[in-house]
Length: 387
Image (tube, helix red, strand yellow):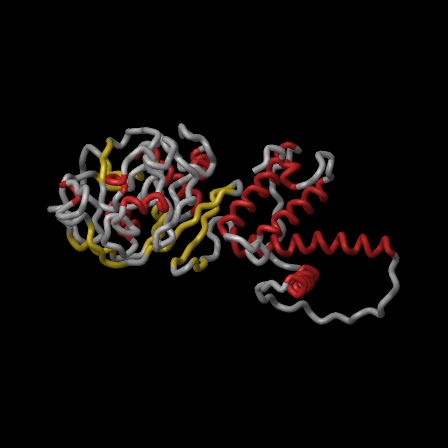
């Protein structure tokens, strides 16, 4: 986002509230999926930037609410959306038609009147498209309507203050947990490899919990590498559990850390290879931030390629806490909905991080730390039970 929020919206500092609102609508319209011609993720990033600029202006002026338009379209909005669809050749989702009205006899208007009418039309177009954006992207107070992305079903949680969390639906199924005896870089505690059943579908965070998300829930940001879209780090297992508890109370959904079996199942996304994309260390650069490409720091989530189930950064960036106590073998583990031993001294982390080599970023790789351990390469992502 530009340092000057007024510059980001293309307006002067003395612009009146209606001018600010209209500028926000115009900027948001350019990012709308029905209008933006590029990568949808870039559209989402641009939308967050212009929204952040708008909110910054409101804060400077002592206003508390962002004032998004209504989620229902007026007859005038619907008519203007239809005009926009014809003009741009874009598809606007079907809506109930406005009731037929009697058309007035055409009258001659002045050039000034025409200019005023066109100004009103431009504001209404912005309002209509931003309202549609609100329906299709941000959803209702806590949970947006579910959507399809490739073959993965996604949903959004509203954490408040414009901060959202995207979740992917992970299907129930079976998989081979752990690494086979002949796998390169295998460690003894990754076995014995065996088939595990995940009996119920669940939601999992598309990305690691970001600093913006953590701060929206906890009110603090302990991270060493600051950045709202960077993963939160320097968080202990007990901090992650408390985040889940508070977010559960806020959203009415049961938020928690994934079990170790759920984490590996989601990471593999149907694969049996060293990584969720194959076996070659050289391909890790496309999917992960690790010691060879991280520059000794974390990076904004979601910038690398996702796995087959639309999950980003399952390899690298930060180690991710799981809910389980650590055991040094799977020999006595339950093969159905495994949740680890009943007690222990350390909790499990998965995924590798920015400061580790490929060996530790493998799908089966495990490390353990005490529940109160905090460091700048330790973060987490959430799992959510279905309603």
